[in-house]
Image (cartoon, rainbow, N blue to C red; front, side):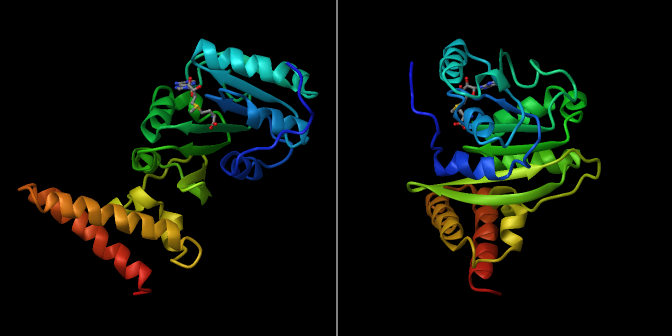
Length: 233
Ligand SMILES: C[S@@+](CC[C@H](N)C(=O)[O-])C[C@H]1O[C@@H](n2cnc3c(N)ncnc32)[C@H](O)[C@@H]1O
């Protein structure tokens, strides 16, 4: 397989690449096509990227893509589950993108000791981000930055976090949307917040046809808080 040098990333993967501090050894867990790893080494943003995937097909896809990159010798491919293919501390930055928030949380929970041997994480949940955020809060891992990326008509949260040991609590709204995004107010992320408003209204309308009172009260609470934030209250 031949291709022109110089890979163009999707806005989602490009946003992730911008959060990598240049010079860090990275590991991309669940890398599939390995586009991010190829970009990081070709742009000299990372001296080495360990690329892993649990499944044979994506692992082979990553292999094929990496071997035609000018940065091939800086990409170390390994097949395996979560952090298992890594030795403790062998990467500075762990990237886990494009998996469900519950799957990312599951990877961390399966071996906290190893997970805490790496200095930093960039995580981009495709769904159920609240499971990941609550897991980080319960374990005491601070969220350092949070970005919302729009790709086509979809919003993606990109979370940069680091191991820590001071557990904290998130409100249900913070767990859904992201505490730092909420704290920054409506100006920068208005469309993302409006999308959540639409989602909550739809859930509320569905629940009001049922007798699930507790769930209805919970969604109404989130809805009111979000309306206040959007109205600058
Ligand atoms: C949708 S792709 C995301 C690819 C890339 N990270 C991205 O963001 O574009 C998800 C990949 O994660 C892999 N995967 C799922 N669970 C995994 C696990 N526990 N450990 C390693 N890889 C996993 C899948 O095989 C799949 O190739």
